[in-house]
Image (cartoon, rainbow, N blue to C red):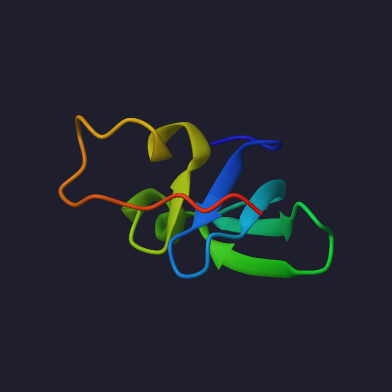
Length: 71
């Protein structure tokens, strides 16, 4: 994971850009710029709440199917 990577919320489909990484904490900002989230890097690695955008289209390694909703 690096600054500029894009993650998509599995809860509501919002796209977030990694703005800053400090130690084990990550600042995500929505593409619209109206939301920011501070989360642990481990949360992004577990892929339970967020997925990297390119992974949304790669169904070969997923345990369950996801719907991608463009905004």
